[in-house]
Length: 213
Image 1: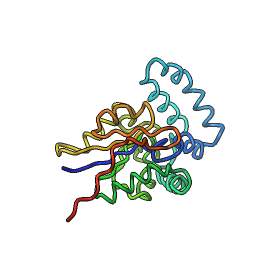
Image 2: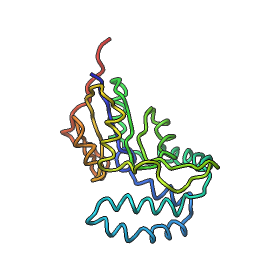
Image 3: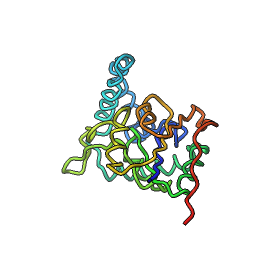
Image 4: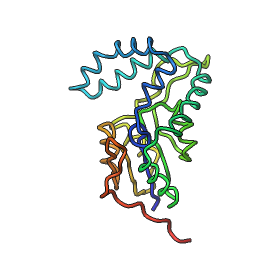
């Protein structure tokens, strides 16, 4: 049976939230603050309706990324990813990633963060598959400001992982740190809830060693 290790990114592999930092890098402080203000009613509503978090995020993205060239944002995302990988990773989670790789397991990131910087971050980390939030690009090569498909958070994480896995049975390790990872962790055979300091619990299921050839 195949073994898969699925990692959330912000707060799990990375020691911080990266989404708003990337938005601020792209749009600047003023436009980011105005976008956050436009989304604030939805954030308030999300206290009782979690789906409003996705609506708030979509509002921020429309205000900050619409009309910007995809090639420019991907170049910026590559430089941003390099900074994150060099300075803002959780060592214990990276150690688990390395153990899964050494055991020959399949590695995948499942994250609500943007593929604009997660694709290059995954490449730097040697993770071949990214299931994350994508932005729609118009025929002129500029972002429309709309999310392509759904925000990869909550139930969407489990749906994306299952769609990627297909019909082949797999033993799944999943790593997450927040309520947005609840469904991903519940779907896993071996869920690992990382704490706010990026620590892996001592009772986490051990990574199986590589099988002898």
